[in-house]
Length: 439
Ligand code: GDP
Ligand code: MG
Image (tube, rainbow, N blue to C red):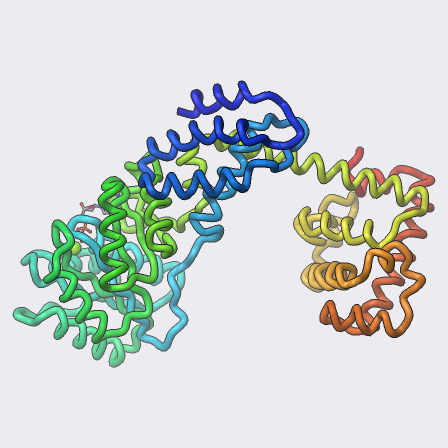
């Protein structure tokens, strides 16, 4: 798959900006990659259209081919669509916080209930109660009880003959009485989506008002998982998705489809049968699994970094000449943020590593952000020539950047000192080059 993709990409010739035909050709292969990864057809169509519109005309970084550039754009769009950050389970509510697990039979609800309980107990130090509302399969409540014993998590005592609703109420009372932080409700599933099941789950949800309703879906069921997600979200409303059996799924397409169709975040993935086989969902990893082009992505990222180094070098030249203005300072501050804030920059300077602990990095990073805000509230003329900044202009800039006129004075002073210092250092070479990573 990735071989064929790279083959097409290599054919694309080097150019300044991506043309329509570059993109169309690369997209044909991207579409095939997505379909092979088991992404739903509608989602593939929407996605490729969106990326095409973004990619045509995009600047190709020097030292990468247009095809590689397309892959990077596709990858970034995939990550954005999958949800850029890992989304933890939300426990911000009055205890006991309810988590309702829903999904088809065999999707992994009971196993996942135990996995989440195990994680919340041992990692987050929460007091967790598990309750099985599965009255359909005779052994279901017993299955959860055994899992509770194995993971040392409390389970609601089994009382024969109760309805799911009665069990749910009993769990709530027991949790309040016992001072539990979290209750996880495991529900019954059916082989397919049916009305009776939906009604039952809906009634339970209406009675207990869970803070999270997690749909558990088997990633191996691909397209069916997408339809299931649509049905559950439409009828019951879910707050997140747990994808199970990701350990057996080399494609990752279900994640993208489910996210695209429901708009709900994938919060966790199951990667095995044991109760510690639960991981946070990392969009970047799934994106590279879907595309199979992780190497290309890091190549383009490196190329982008090189451009940053070139920018920094240009600034250094200006400093030497003494024409370092506030525009340059803003660029410099941006580079510092990219390099991992003050901590990252300081760590690169020889001799600083030792005293790093004594410096208030967080404070410095916050002022980095403020300083950039100040500069971006200035007109281009003010940035080139800070001397024209009178009290009136300073008040305007302060208002625009949410700072005080004193902050602007401090920034101007810092800029002047930097420019002076850089001029002297520039004459001597050495240190400045080191600072800018040119050694
Ligand atoms: P439920 O009917 O939805 O409650 O499903 P269960 O929790 O009983 O799980 C059904 C089967 O799937 C069991 O054999 C589990 O061990 C297995 N299972 C659940 N999650 C995973 C997973 O992430 N990976 C693998 N490989 N197996 C899983
Ligand atoms: Mg079950």
